[in-house]
Image (cartoon, rainbow, N blue to C red; front, side):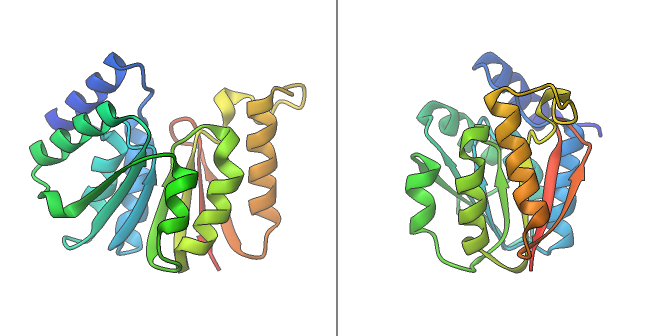
Length: 195
């Protein structure tokens, strides 16, 4: 996928502050998931410099609102500027500073169409539990980084990150609450529809 100047700028700023933004392929998949679900209300865990937020906003309905959560105020300041440069009015985003696990309990049950998690894998299980509560039936959960740098399929890989991701993917796959698919884009994107 080709990225426009605003996305390239956001990606460059992510590199400058030491973040690994979603790849263009993963971004295109996020835009597709938002568009396919006619998403009006989306939660993003991990604002970064706005790369994934832009992809999500571009797939959402014109009246949709992206709620994005991050602990880094400086990253959010950059993302806010990027969203405006891309032509999205301030009312299309709700930027919340704080730890996701502190903020998520304050969000409304069953009110969201898509939840995107781009956070440390150690928080995946708690984010999946929160997403199950936040999503409407038919809503989509997307977890970034689920290929664990290519280690997910290697049984010898027993580091904490890989084991955590493996256990989260297995729990989603075996749950009656989700219909999952692992998309081999970017660093791996697990998409799951809430039953």
